[in-house]
Image 1 (tube, helix red, strand yellow):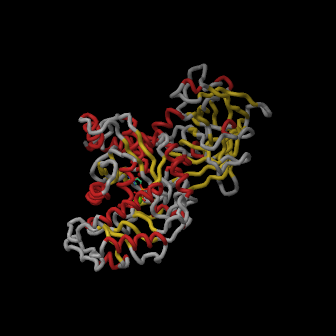
Image 2 (cartoon, rainbow, N blue to C red; image 1 turned 90 degrees about the horizontal axis):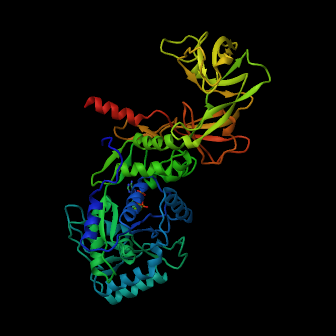
Image 3 (cartoon, helix red, strand yellow; image 1 turned 90 degrees about the vertical axis):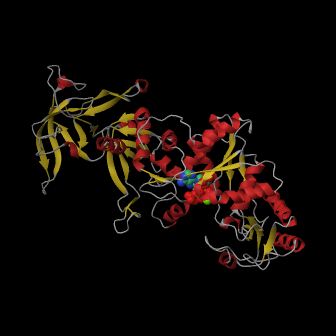
Length: 559
Ligand code: ATP
Ligand code: MG
């Protein structure tokens, strides 16, 4: 991938749609995003959402949100709600087109009866295991079920009684009668209905048989008059089956299924099943833990929706699987935050400084710029006083040549304030530096010396008496390469660092959860919902250093 600017370049899917509109095959495009409500949405889903809703927007069509709720044992109302919240947060609107596969259960049941009557489906009394064992392999055909020849009358009766609840789970299924010798295993009499006595989040106990994904999906598309059914590559082998149903049932239209590659991201897992395990095992604090690649996790961490959309667009759609570097996602996060986040001063690792010639009990307000990238963000006042905090790493007692920050005898600029010179270092019994003594030059108010003398370093600071004490949570990757298992990931034991008492300028107190700011020279932070009036909690969204830009530079150097 090269670092070309984002544009709305076309891709093979958009080309197909444009051609279908051009030829008059369709008057308007209708797509859908079809999540199964068995977990929270993740960054991979964002790719599909941006594609489906994006295409509909670009071509003046519509995109439906349809829940594929055919598996009641894994699906929950909590997920139905979180998915809607996440799609809305990403910036998309399904209008009136909120649908559920479960709304079509009656129609799907009638279509199953239709197939039975036509001799194209039968009730099989074999167990799931027997059916699996007789499916055959990639090189060998399957073996016909002894019930394959069952006549339509009998199958219809049994199917009706399956629905009425006369049989236990797993005792019978409804199968399509297609071709046990097909080279495509999906066509070897696939299962259409299973008996599952479970409470469904929407239909309750109305049903105890449920359609399979394969039987529900294409027909749901057809009912909704979907023109282009966009899905990921693992469904490529299901396409002939999708088309078989659409051909053999009196459906109102014949949607076209087109597959594209899933998004894979380095340093993380994006499969709902694996993410659910992390939640259940307490590896993370819920689906919206800021380390999770879920949309709710990224949101809580402070990622703007715009950055996720930009990322999805930049990754694009292709037919080939690939792994995208996490640094690319962070690159888009920084690009958006750089333009939109107000700058503030926050000292993450505080070291106290006493300015000995600044009058005791005095303080003053100094003007600071909110966002150098956006003049309209204006200015604010920051209080300054005799005692301040600076970052521990901005001082070195015995600095190497290239260290331009504070050191004994050295003068530096306090951002928006004064020049100070370090005159003394206070240590505890163990020799740890616990405080610095400095003097300031009152002539340098605002950060410039009237005599034109220059300093090499500018550091940030926070007044001790005015400081807001907050908790900062720093996040690393949840996973790291497992050196014992080539190509595999293992949990990163240091993915969360909690700093219990960072010192912030007063304007950072009492902010709404979700507020994003840049702590100057440190990184982008976002107010966490765990904040209390006494103690704000800030999540570090991302550091300032752009590792993606570095990767690009290195790649360019290599040529
Ligand atoms: P998971 O494997 O995480 O459970 P899924 O495909 O089972 O994902 P669904 O709820 O069925 O999850 O997915 C809804 C839609 O999102 C599907 O059309 C699916 O193809 C798409 N999708 C899921 N994961 C990705 C991904 N990593 N990249 C792109 N699209 C995805
Ligand atoms: Mg799925």
